[in-house]
Length: 290
Image 1 (cartoon, rainbow, N blue to C red):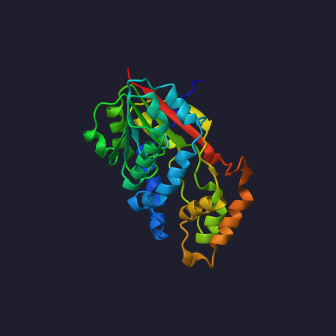
Image 2: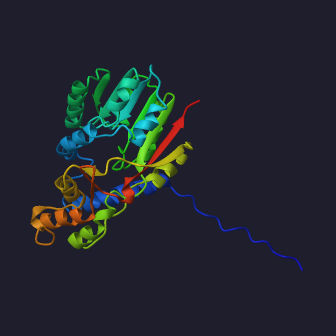
């Protein structure tokens, strides 16, 4: 008896760029539908700049991304920080390198960075207002590129990552969440809008997109240090943006109810309120040239 061998079923490859685009567009469409400020708008970051400045000043030296930068940089390095914001990572890396080029589209964010740099005595930080990858043409050669949480709202990741490959001199280090930033708000979002929040791109999506441009990166998973707040009200302010909440929706869910919900899930220790959820887990994704 002769056995007939059947070839295995073929599995369609994942188009990671399309998957990324679909996730970004689904969240953007919901933001538009619910009239929420959008991360792609400069006005969103103008309002957020003071909060990011507080986060920059409170960054602990034990932050995993800071430690990951420390072991990669050299004293003569020129480092590009894409999406530098208020300087959360430009400032701690500055004493270890020759120069940091802090790139960000928001003038308000860069103003906060300049203020903190002056306070801390960091003259080797050059700020550059612009977006990635458009800013690539204006840059000198750099030794290293860092990019932390600066791409969740980027629709087209292929040119973004291709430009990173071009810019990277010796190394590139990125950071992205492994889980959804707003999963802790799911019950409130469903109550407020009658639908769930579409997922944003996370680590798996970034890693897949990197392989699609020929980069097989190293990965380190660590707990982040950004999910703590001096007051519950600071997280309440952030949560209202994540929830696409507006005052006219108070009859469905009031701001006071949002505040009370957060008080119930936060842990108070060491003088701060901590949000201990999976979104505090970060993936540090890196590769080297040569």
